[in-house]
Length: 370
Ligand SMILES: [Zn+2]
Image 1 (cartoon, rainbow, N blue to C red):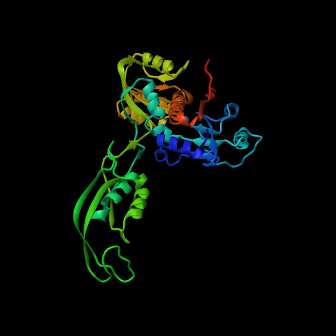
Image 2: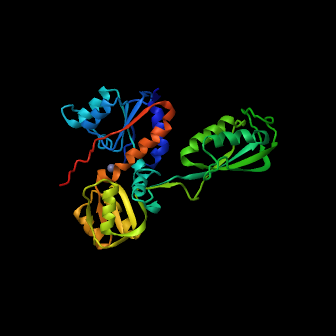
Image 3: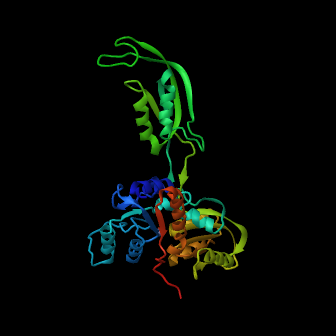
């Protein structure tokens, strides 16, 4: 049985919401149409010709990758060059291509959470906060007999969520007044006569991402020609997401032992490091992929070591000067574990739909070690 590409997109975006992506990023559907039919999804970290052929070999209709081929603007689509051929093959095979990048880095259960889990970190927190959901208070004035209808309509589309409680609202009874003027068609009252109506003021909380849906639903069911409502921005604690994590090992290790742990858990034959091998390691900062930008953050938060990738000479010197040990386990090495986690989630969600979920078996790490 096949599902639409949009069904898979909805699943992916509830796992790694697009709103969590960095502004400069390019994520979402890259090739194909949301209406396309999908019976086999194929996941990989990267995209190269070999991987596209592998996907083709298992009958994939949809590719899901972490690194998009459309990161820099395309200047041409030359099929004599590998970049153009990859796109040509995907289009010719009628496959869709979807990318989850920094939204997958930041989300709960994404690249960095998986890395922290693989290493057995405890008391894990965000290394940086790159995204916070804005919250609003909505207050709407409703005639008494419409209270339930309006409350249900707005809560069904995302208003009134506090933790694991839905439909959180507060109602205050009062008297609303209005004077219908020329050109109105009042639901209650008459033109030119001041009306006094018993109303309920329903107050509730709305996350920014649901705001348009909530207002639309409210206007649809509210009986008044002109709906009176107020929106206030809130400074309450909000849902947060961010790149990188920081947490604690369950027991103190030496840097040498920590490196052995990283190699064992990430199946790596070699990593680069800097720092004293006897240094005691308990507090670990990490960022899958290129995380050099957070060295000072890791040092500021008192990490003993920072596990990341793509580090340069002077960045290593900067870390050492701040008494922060570094382990560079490679871009591929620190990011690949998330692919199987996302695949397991999709398999679970698509269990009854009989959609095949396949993970690439190709090691796309361009580097070898000897
Ligand atoms: Zn990456």
